[in-house]
Length: 261
Ligand code: ADP
Image 1 (cartoon, helix red, strand yellow):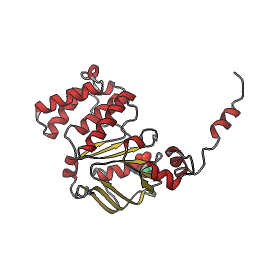
Image 2 (cartoon, protein in one colour; image 1 turned 60 degrees about the vertical axis):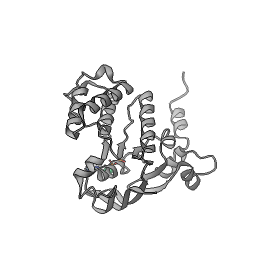
Image 3 (cartoon, protein in one colour; image 1 turned 45 degrees about the horizontal axis):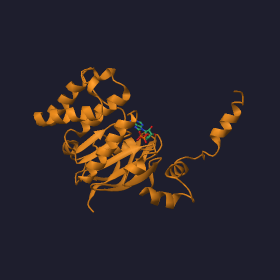
Image 4 (cartoon, rainbow, N blue to C red; image 1 turned 60 degrees about the horizontal axis):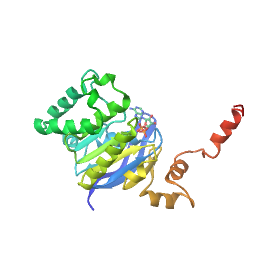
């Protein structure tokens, strides 16, 4: 199958901090690929490099045949990027902001109107559309950010911890939408440190830790290669991405807190 994204030996440092260290990754077109890693493992840096927002120090990157550092404008046309923290104009209302995005993207206005209405209804934002974005909850801002990244029907969708703070119903709607888009040939890259939902959402997963890809495969392969009998994906994630085993830390802390009721 055709690769939509190819990352070959990519490295990136900020001063003396190594954010990515020779990362190799291939993502097939029409699949959902998860990047799981604890805070600081390099997920955002990798996604920003693919989206042309950060320059790599070394290595090669191709997104549908384009190098983000050479063709940033074309990359922005084919990618929908949802940053970890929504970067929105706080004083605009949701309607104003989505109309602004539609006009910048050059989306046909009749299509834009019906699409934004459907998104707003499906993600239960109707009562907030005329409120300034600055007054919305984090989860509602995140929903506006997701809608604005999808309106131009991008070929590649990059979501950085995008479901953080989103209520369970809308989270489900968005995950179902991403699955439907991938069936239609769109490629999705989804980063998270929340393990519960990734194995049902993603076709393949990469574990990223301290700027290195520890392993890539589907959930069963990752468990088989990195776990013991009875291990879950969460066990594998915790064992491969932390220096200190979780063990009985929770029980020990509860014990130290005393037994009074
Ligand atoms: P994640 O998304 O997995 O939390 P990041 O890519 O944000 O990881 O960060 C990887 C490492 O790079 C961290 O040590 C982080 O502190 C560092 N880092 C990220 N962005 C910057 C920056 N703009 N300046 C300095 N250090 C950064």
